[in-house]
Length: 79
Image (cartoon, rainbow, N blue to C red; front, side, top):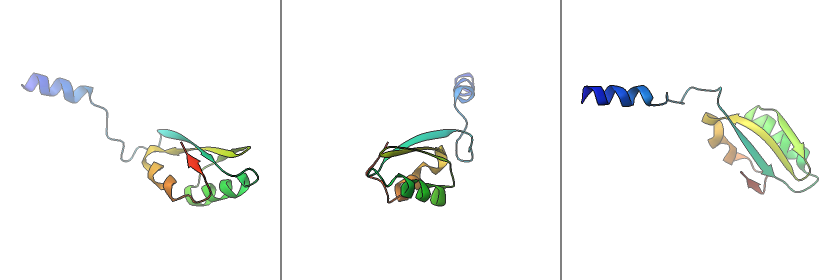
C-alpha cells in the first residue's frame, strides 16, 4: 500500500491556491460601442490588460481570480 500511495502522490499536481502564473483567458461580449466601458471595468476590478474587439473584450486572469469575473456588470456573456 505504501508503494501505491507514494506512486499516486508523486503523480498528483501541486495545489493551485497560490499559483498566479497559470492564466485563464476570458472572452466577454458587450453591446457594440461599449467596449471601452467594459475594458475600464475589467482594469479597475481585476487589474489586468484587456484586448478590446468589436462587441467583445478578451483578457487573462490567474485561475485563482476567475471567481472575481462574475462580479463584472458590463457584459452580456462570459466564456
